[in-house]
Length: 68
Image 1 (cartoon, rainbow, N blue to C red):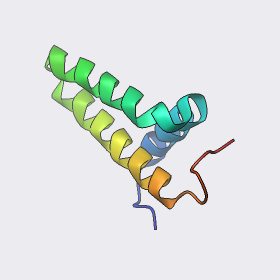
Image 2 (tube, rainbow, N blue to C red):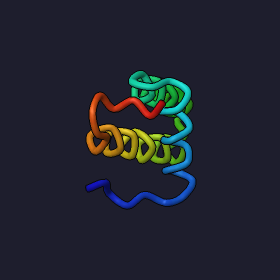
Image 3 (cartoon, one colour):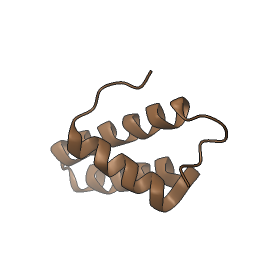
Image 4 (cartoon, helix red, strand yellow):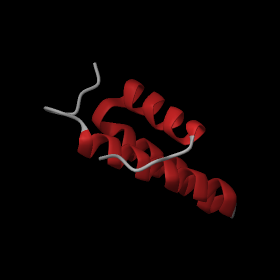
């Protein structure tokens, strides 16, 4: 079962999954790296939560994990 994530985190994760499919987690990791490079700890923490949410949702998805 998927972990509980707040609404904005889950919405961001679902939007990335809808747009990028299996590459959503990679895109989120790249965004997190941008925040890390800027020294934005709060932004990095938010993206880390989004990455965890994507991972959780993808592991719970039936079949091949495609949402479309």
